[in-house]
Length: 128
Image 1 (spheres, rainbow, N blue to C red):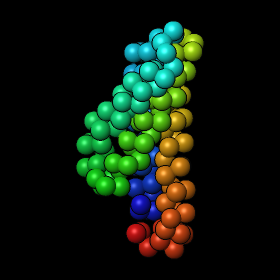
Image 2: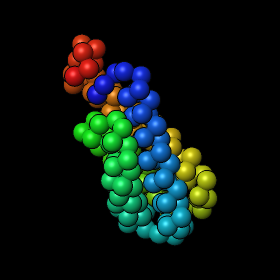
Image 3: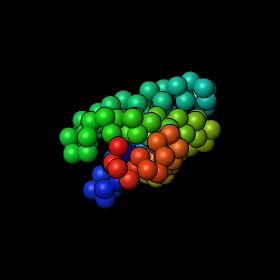
Image 4: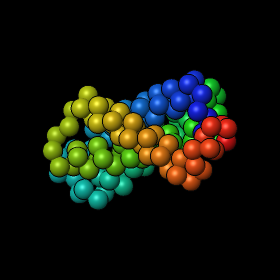
């Protein structure tokens, strides 16, 4: 992952948008009373589909391979969390979008931490 400001802010924005859209869609699709496990599976698929679709516009600007894993992970995470929450109690579209955006932020931070853990801080300084 590149540590230049343009790419850091791009990764952050892409993942927040992916989480926001996935959370919003899951809040609209899943209603209270669904089986939580089935809601989680459907919401995970919705989140990954959102990540797949949003990967193309964001990948043009921030790099295909650098954006694909984080955006798919954030979409999947947001879908699972909001989907399971929506199965327990009613969730409005705006609340689902908010929770999804937070999940997108958590997703990219998780990927950054894992990347530093695997490559070390020296790998991040060189832009590798």
